[in-house]
Length: 450
Image 1: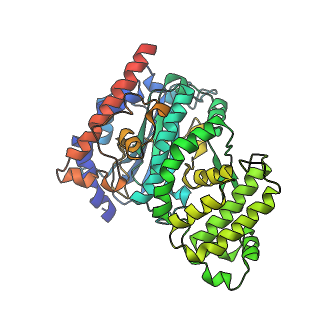
Image 2: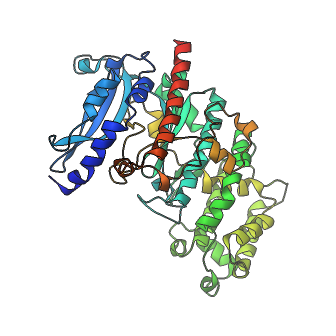
Image 3: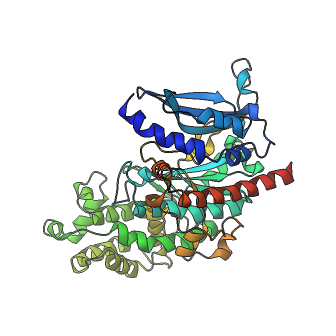
């Protein structure tokens, strides 16, 4: 047997035997029996004793005991086990008929938002790639009040948030109306909330409109609550500029940072900030959106002049917070631009194809991430709302949002299968109990509508 297999197998076996929430998972994904189980796809990622992995698709689960029999195993006698469970859509025909029915296609699936820390690599300075720390988690946390607002705008009430197990967050919206949305309808409602839709370095698209009520609500009540802490932790305006001021004048330095391929952009965060500021200004201008809060003549020339003034003062300002305060003061007549910058640096980078599509496989909560060994657990919104002092009247929190019996969730504290193997299960059971209440709420609503 491979070293990886022998390392994982005992902890997985203990987890599946004694801790996995079979009843709750099946009750949720069958909506208490209101969904035809033979038409819902389950998928498993399997690891063998020789460390090979493969995926098996189009399985069906009708009851909790059946799922238990699929997952439970003895490391001493079985030479493979399930690493991860994914759930697919509800199809037009039974899984067993997928090869014989020409119209076999997805017809229903939860509306899911998937956010990955790796998609923030252009703005996070603490980590990169697959790594994620608690500072990175703030980017994930902002999605929580934002998606609660999304649900309020669209009239959804059955949703929850889950840690992915490594570096991401999933939001599951389970209302019957949400599950039955067509791909076109999903695209339409998601696009309205996808404010930072492109951020590749060569192209930046920020669809922020300071005159739009929803954009203003998102900025004023959500992004501004997160921005100061993120600014300090990520040091977005940090770094020395002294050596460049000996080579360029202030005005020529503005021209230099405009260039997409400028070598300055990798020198210090402050250069990326200046470059991004110019990109956002151009983006708003090209979209015909307001740039100032007054009727200043020649706003382009004035903006560039103020930016040059800001650059000239950078050697006197040390911290990101001090630099941002000065920048805000200089650009006070350009509040739409300031707001768009705050939004750009904080707003979720959605994997929109997961939300728009119907046939994506989605990791089921309480799956284990085999590399981090952490469990994908649901967590309540209330501690986040409280910690950032977000106006609850704006969000109109539901009963599960107001859940206050758990601390603010941090991925560094997420329960692992090793914790459970060693008998440390109290923290895990708090989140499992919370999930039981989620399932009870969602299935009760399903019964009312059936």
